[in-house]
Length: 145
Image (cartoon, rainbow, N blue to C red):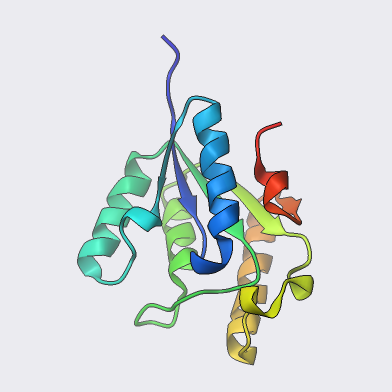
């Protein structure tokens, strides 16, 4: 019997719904099990502990980054970056897919504040330093071929 892997999908949520769906569908099409924060938004300590447990139980961690840094925890860290840091600390295999040019995304899919945009740029640099990244321009590029 072939092993089925659990894959945790991490991203900001509202701006990347189509992209998350494309990755989720691709994971299902290759007969693995997706898991993600839409099941339990990271809004409090209990939800954060559950997210950590699901990341721990996952075999892979897929990170999708577009043009938003996202909501912040009490320490000023974005929840997507917090999930990424946790997966990295647990030495999970990480698949990072970054939008190739977030400057060209529609206004509703990008950060509007200078501080959030700066945090996004720093986060992208951290990811690119730690991983070989794949770049995308449309949700169709995230589907299984």
